[in-house]
Image (cartoon, rainbow, N blue to C red):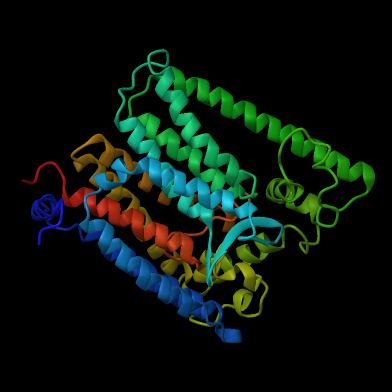
Length: 408
């Protein structure tokens, strides 16, 4: 008995070339390093998150191989369905499935599985943007206004739903990806000048709003970490007060938290952890900031895992992790140059941009170069949703490599 399309599938598999082993080597190294760091960060109280992470690694590895074996153009053909599925997951946050933690609505419960829809929506949005852009020819702004409007519509809907959760970290990831796609599509430079002006305007509005917030606190004798929510109802910008606190904690930590026991606590403890690691670290289980709970256990294995890694593995371990992440992103760009079509090129570049932005923001925040946001470190931080999505994305890039143009 022959199934419909079986011959086409077999022919596609037969045309596959050699696998790219750079990505799997980097991924395996990062996954082992991540599980080790999670286990070590929880060793003082015998935490078991490393076991859960190991389960997600197994599931992600299976999905990686599956996505690498199928034709990546499957995602292009079904982009609209995937995009719709991503929106349904985001909207389900405002149903009984939604779970609220720390004042944010970011998780849904499906049986015993907790899923973060924003991570899935990042992938489905990337696929849909790449599919839409691959079907159109981009020129100057006037000639491309309709496709640009379509792209911004595709981008805007999930971005707003992510921002409303609120999840500022994930909301910051998507704009640079769209920008990278438009850049490699050879859109005219006039657009990027206009965009730079818009970004400057937005940053100016945020700076003005944070300045007003600081004055509001001073005039009313309020503490930023004890009176959250009083200013946000007066502000024209859709920011939460805790987000303003994070910006203030980054810009002027000593002014808003002179004792270091409030909104700047996590950052200060993270800097101590990174600095105390030295060249080779304190060894597994030897990180005082992590083991004694100075870095809160709720973030030590996810958003601030790099701090624990730097403290226990030192500068050498931190650099190894960063080299692996940079190599993975650069390898995706290399595969983009080998792609047989525009969709493959756009997908590989988008995935490289996503991994690079996650790395930049996460590492930047734990060493005090960027405001603190909830952005995990690819393949290292604890959490199944993002890990699975990362494995799927790299599987798609592997599929692009297997079917690259110069192999017959």
